[in-house]
Length: 144
Image (cartoon, rainbow, N blue to C red; front, top):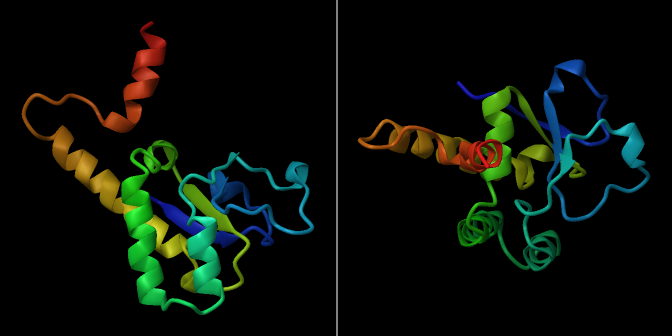
């Protein structure tokens, strides 16, 4: 249904990438912004610096990292909304400087976005709701 891809920021740019969003707190070494064709550099949905450091230094397990990262996203209400919007418009490519994407935060983030979209769709199908909350801000801006 929704097309979310994971890719290293150092990989070749593909015209089929759709919205290209870098989701890292730190800027990737050796990369100039004008060479990346980014839609956005969105830090709000990336793990906190403290959590990232704990995991990279081996102070916590991957399972603990995932649990704490999900808590951070839950606590940062609305942090997924921009990513959900891009996803609803077409393919979304989440980018990171991580060497091993499958062991990075990106699969956890992709799952959280897909779960939030599914929940939003379930709520929109309920009585009295007419549109997705991820579009609420756009609607408000157009109708001012």
